[in-house]
Amino acid sequence: MRPLALLAAMLVLCGCESPRAASSHSPVTVASPSCATPGTCPPDRVGGAYGFDQERQALVVFGGVARPPSVVNGKLVTLNDTWEWSAERRWTNRTSQTSPSPRDLAAMAYDPAMHAVLLYGGRRVAGGTVRCDDFGEIFCSTDTWAWNGTTWTELHPKAAPDLGPSTMAFDYAAGQMVLYGFNFGTYGTSIWDGTGWSSASGESGSPQPGRSGPRMSFDPSTRRVVMYGGFNAGGGDLSRMWSWNGGSWSPLQATAPGSEATTTDSQIHGLLAYLGPRYHGTATNYIKDAGSETWRWDGSRWVQLSPAHDPDVFATAMFDDPKAHRALLIGVRRDGDLQIWTWAGSDWNRLG
Image 1 (cartoon, helix red, strand yellow):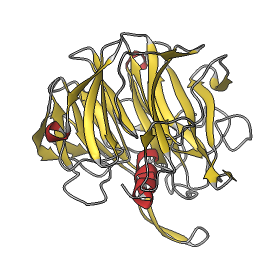
Image 2 (spheres, one colour; image 1 turned 45 degrees about the vertical axis):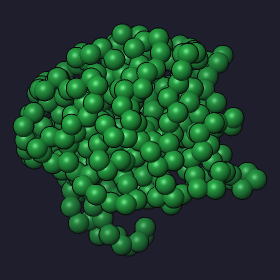
Image 3 (cartoon, helix red, strand yellow; image 1 turned 135 degrees about the vertical axis):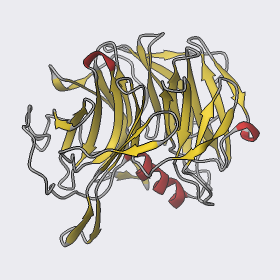
């Protein structure tokens, strides 16, 4: 994949754009200090990894490329800081004696069988072994790490997927983590069973066309991991939904709406998808074309919802929080403020 194409995919994956504008809707009561206060929230970044520990109800953010970017010897400087957010403690910068090396575009998801957030690979990693650009200047790693809320622990499976930037989702029906990614133009799927990785399908058994940064979540209505969206330099039907049966992907007779983030929604036994507002113009002279969109998937069709409040953020990630009976949306406004919103079935509410 061309460098510019991969950059575009990264922006789609992370929901990171230029600064955003304020919403035209009435504000929702804010329950915590604004992230505009320096040091109270993770620094602005592109390509960070996001996961949600359902047991501890903690949102985890790791790495990425700081924005504005820093360049040393012609290369972008990546981060390896770890931040956590919880409703009680808000944002906390966490430290660990060991941690993954600096990187961006790592795959991260919660593994309930391990009681930990699992991290795989990443881009711009010193010592990386997978070539991630056309010129052999950017490399991806294939290492695997687990975060238990206190310590990062590197895992050492006998074999590791030979994949570049990837996406992960936990298959609750099979009790395994599903990893989908590409290696310089070829795509594949691997599964993690708690102790090691195994290749599950080659490109012939992967969604067509192959893509980077797809939306991938476990759908409780069908008991399958589903995938859609993402980016492919050659185009193709990326809105077609695909279903994972534990061994291969198969197309569904459904297309998904455009979205920046999707998550399992255990309350509706389906999926929840979110698309941020649309603007045009320059950074100082812009016009808002449309507000955000919220969609629900029930296993057979997508339905657009009509919440009373508009988060007016560009989504970075979205997660199911079954203990609190809600979904969490983390996003950035046009003014750069990092915010967290909750969805409890009928409306969005500002939480952090």
